Image 1 (tube, rainbow, N blue to C red):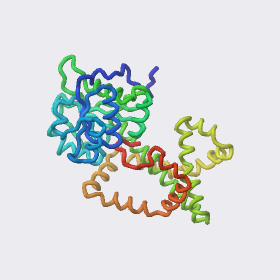
Image 2 (cartoon, rainbow, N blue to C red):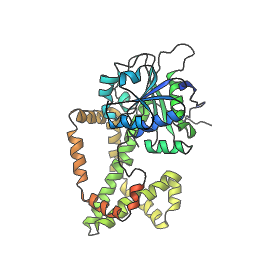
Image 3 (cartoon, helix red, strand yellow):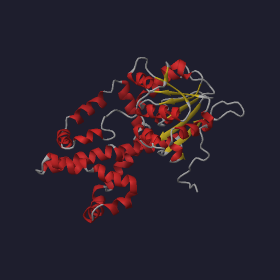
Image 4 (cartoon, rainbow, N blue to C red):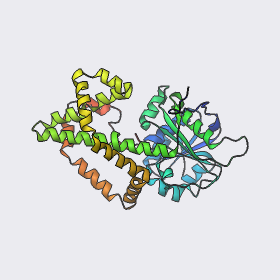
Length: 350
């Protein structure tokens, strides 16, 4: 039974997209997974992006039709934007908006650019969201295993459609089903809720919080005289083991699986590490995201050539923790074969 906290979509099927074309814009980790899963579900798929790009060449090599944007978008019932957030505004303004017509539906994998007004499709164009809650590599892997990962679904704007024709919502349901998410569960939400919670989760816990804590803990041990490789092993390398427990079993299941010493330390350390100052900082992050200030800051930096972003990336890459990491990983060459080890960006947020 559905609850107000988990409004699952019902009657999921791919029928609305059968016999209709889906244009996938971009062929990174998310775009590739969506395109291949749609194709393998019997949907007519065409991939578009920069002419001559490696991404389009890869799509063609994997048996997908490719074309320039005008040709790909023309006649497509659904246009899936699988590009990084920071290029949505320019891509929509310069390439997609001149081609997408009333009656078509545009789909997004993350709601930020629409919710914060960087992309404003005209009236009559359907605007939907299907956001798988995992990287494209996982989406594709689970699909090929006959499984799926949960996804969020939202409709920002309905399309112009003749009586009896599928609505934008029905296209979104079919899209979510065709990429395998219906096998796990598709949760109805809004563009605003998806965008805000996704950005906040990344910043407070998954990326900003995790990396910030790991870096600070590493530096604390090294400053106290402990070997960098040992500090790295304890504060970075072992994250995956505990994170996997949390992922698979939830907080109580994780606590049940760790040692009594670790569990005792959890109860005593958590109030120290997450005090009123940290909670206030989290509220500040949430306020920055909800107001649109974070999105504006990121977009302004990108439009200026990303000077702040690139400087932060270079500074972080030069930190001593990186050398310690290379030393530890060299002891386990098999890590190079682990999922995600090859690198590369994923346009859909983790």
